[in-house]
View 1 (cartoon, helix red, strand yellow):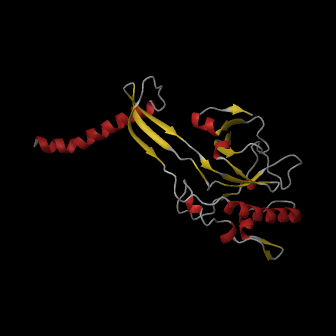
View 2 (cartoon, one colour):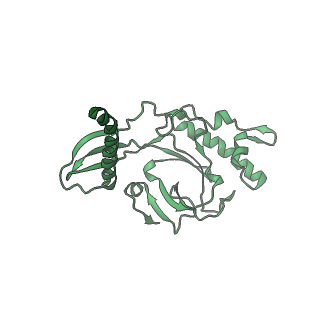
View 3 (cartoon, rainbow, N blue to C red):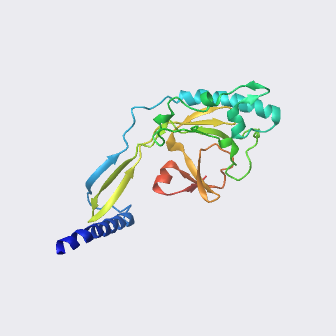
Length: 235
């Protein structure tokens, strides 16, 4: 009889023990390592053999820019993303949604497998960091980010769990590789290391961007390294 009761309550005690250890783990997420830590286990997001070809995004962005440039010259504004993806202008089909807004190797992304949607971010339709609308034609010397593709950059995250000073610790390491592909308002297409990403806080959320975007002045900016260490600086 006692054994039956024990069998019933044992899972409960195991769950309590699990969450107790987990809470201690959470509180000591970034402990100071005064002694050589002892690893319990180590995990790593191994680089996928499928790395993809960034030029697939570069050539698409160059073609998309020609459409955006022609559209703004005619209408003095930029098209909504839905209109852009339809690709029609003056009765001509200049872009193909299936060919120009999707990538043949987009499932090589570390973050997204079996993606069904376009991997492109339509950044031109968002506001500048200072809250103003991105114009169709920025003033001389100004640049806006129009589109971004992050399919060809990887974080290569590794995670180490162990014991130091009689406490559990969790150490995370990133070794970024590859490129973010960025289309600018002047038509330039850049391959930018993910380590050069920055973020700023606006409207209750953190937004990723890159230096060179208009409107960053006065914003609290965090670089990639600082995002990991949870620090920030002002530009």
